[in-house]
Amino acid sequence: MLAAPRPRVDAQPTEPLIVVGPLQSSSGIGQAARLCYQALKQSGFDVRGIDLTNTLMQPMDHPSFEWADGRSCRGSGTLIVHVNGPLLPLAMAALGAVVRDKFVIGSWAWELPRVPDEWRYGIPFVHEIWVPSSFVAKAVLPIAMNRPVRVMFHPAANCRSETAINSPIKPTEFRALTILNVASSFARKNPIAAVRAFRAAFGDDPNARLTIKVSNASSFKDISRIMAEAIDGCSNVTILDKTVDEAELERLYLDADVYMSLHRAEGFGLTLAEAMLYGVPVIATNWSGNVDFLNDQTGVPIPFQLVSAQDPQGTYDYPDMMWAEADVDVAAKELQRLRGDARLRKQIGEQGARYARDILSPQAYASNAQRYLGLTP
Image: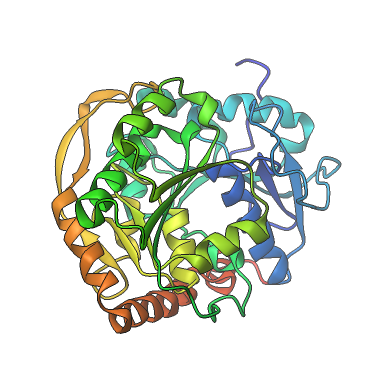
């Protein structure tokens, strides 16, 4: 893209820090951009924002976020661009004169062991790359062309209120929760495995319930049929297909006894981290981005086999690469174990929350940014 301006090779990181991305989209990359903005702002940096929701053709379904507009910022500064490599030239063209004299950071996430070749398009436009997990770092390093690749865990502790962990007394019903954005690939999120594990564990037991919170269901035309076949009329499995605000999302977490993600791949695993921060024990596939923060002390990792990555929606359809197929039978047994042991649920939930609050805090994120950029707020 000839119209996309490239930054000066010798630009240096300075304030203001301008967070760029789909700030008004509820997508994972939009949430990552908002968390970045909030963490740096809370730590005292001069932070601005530039929204590219429309430029990136993302749904504008998070319009309530507010930021100090950075479009008029000229001269030196630092751009933290939450746009993956293939679309970075488009983003830089949209930013135009803002780019000149800026130090540019690409904040990237990917969910397979290698990034596709088209990610190289973004390399000439960045001075360094931030990724949310060691898994993504390994995928990006081979194409980085000597750009530093920094692991920057999302400051997910900004997602919840400080008092949220102390939930009211729950009913006798055992409640499991799964959350997915279908636009991020139904096959990758793999809710069918969660349904299979839940049904194997509890059948039609009315005192056990699985809630599957879905967004952007229209992005995959076969979802209704596939989910109906998997649920097969079970009255204790509920699909919640609607947009919820932050208070409603918080209530879903607080009402859950366990959170389950039998994903095939995650670049980070933001919903897993959010559940942990609410003190909810997390059952999750022991592969990809979440292994940085979820282990047998902080959650319930599930063994897996690697299989060819095949995605009917196309985003992650790379049969020459591998992703994980979680062991549904083990997940079912873990569900039963946790249902039968409230003390164990509390122990895992508290250990997970403590660990997540430590490594996923806004303070930790800002401290790492300060260290890497050499800036003091």
